[in-house]
Length: 418
Image (cartoon, rainbow, N blue to C red):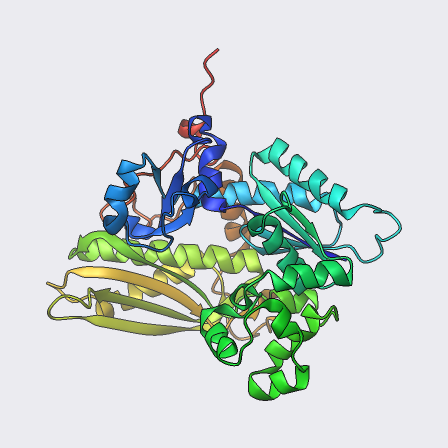
């Protein structure tokens, strides 16, 4: 038996954790630079507030309905996600964190220990709520894809109260018939259009297809999905989510930038983020892509990129920052009003299998990076930084509705008045 535990409207729910005054109110969260709505809590969903709609188009609707608006607080979300995953992990020793708000559990060998999956699911929900104040849905199924389908039912279909279990042919058929094919894990909107053109409208319709035919018409991936929907497990943990092959950090600026120092600082901040993610994944890179661009909607569009190749693979923030300083003049153009920049690590490799070079001195300092990561993990991201990460707000995202960093910055700790 597999389970998928998934937070309900995670970003919006996270905003309510340390602000009880808004728990009973409609809440939406905006994307980078307060551009679009990216998260809608269940209360706001009842008001028919559309997701992924540009904020300026629905601003009047939000004001008329007294909807609470928040800018994306990624630091808060990451910390609450870690807390939630730690709680979920106590219910099964075989946990696989799939995304910031989703976690798979593999209960192989637990059949004789757990006699009531519904009750166990509600235990998970209650414990996560008690310790994190985050609402979650729990879905159980004999395959990872059916667990995902059950989770969809637990959160979206009436009558399940946050927990759904597919443990029989009757429950499998009932849930799959009530599920649009677009909502099947891995299908998506574009593929769903092709399937619906073939009169495959529900998850059950897809499960009833001949797997070899689906492989011939589409792909081996969709063939596996069909088999999983039928109850035949085809996905191993390393196939559920592999390590990333590329890692990028990009962002549009809150305001246009013309100053070279501000642009270089932004690039270095992005490279530090990429390096930190590489180290967290146990990866490194020998090729670093960096780019800058003006807005494509303005005259004189300018975009320039550069791929820097290191002598050996690395994930050292200082090495990355030096590389950006070295090639920055190839990217910067005076007079351009820069709108966006980013850094990406390409062709990642594992740090475990790095081949030492007898004739090449190491270019990185793993002990220093470990110290940097440990301090920032304990006291909050940005506590310790490299010198070229000069603090500035000129290139930062526009976040007019940002909530405090309750768990990662000392001066934002919640205050209790007795």
